[in-house]
Length: 128
Image (cartoon, rainbow, N blue to C red):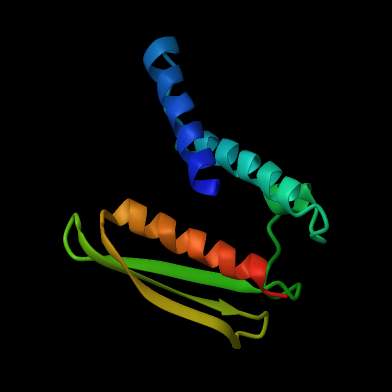
């Protein structure tokens, strides 16, 4: 769902540029996407302890809290080819909690990164 919400927001922004003369501002576009995704995440997981304001306005710093960090990446052979994704979830101390790696077939780099993020979100929400 996050992928589609992001693509939808980009498409709406593009239409505003084409039909209404809106100027491209990547920071404002990113913030708009972040707000939409924050609303969606809070709707899906209302019991998560972080507030929407904290999620959107002041992301927690590693040194201050006990939040885990998920790092993901994708590798694609050329501009469209065989691809794989991998990621690691670490706790606030830097210890590995979950590691994943898998082949995803033949895709372009943007789709590969999106699949990596989706996989990380699925793992994160399935974990305690």
